Length: 100
Image 1 (cartoon, one colour):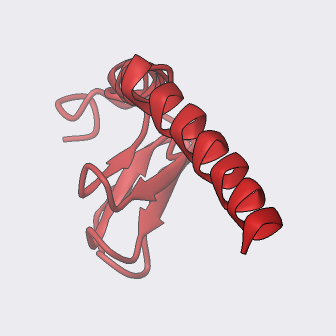
Image 2 (cartoon, one colour):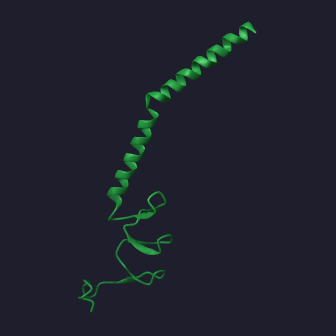
Image 3 (cartoon, rainbow, N blue to C red):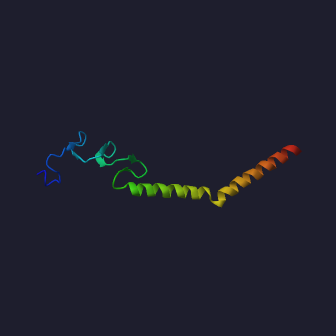
């Protein structure tokens, strides 16, 4: 039966005390997902999933794309016009204070 499961004879097999399943090497139990994740990094609420061995590359790509889109929005000309307009408004307020 051990050979059918892909284990070698004499290999140490760990059982997760929380989910009662065979725990793979370098796996950790996620309290949110209620399962063991191989090479678990963390549970991400943004993707509602654990970041581990199988999806770490996709999570890094998601993070880079999200950060670059935020940067792209903040560099949009509309935002620079707002800051330029607020400076003009401040200058006008200062000028009006001098006359009134």
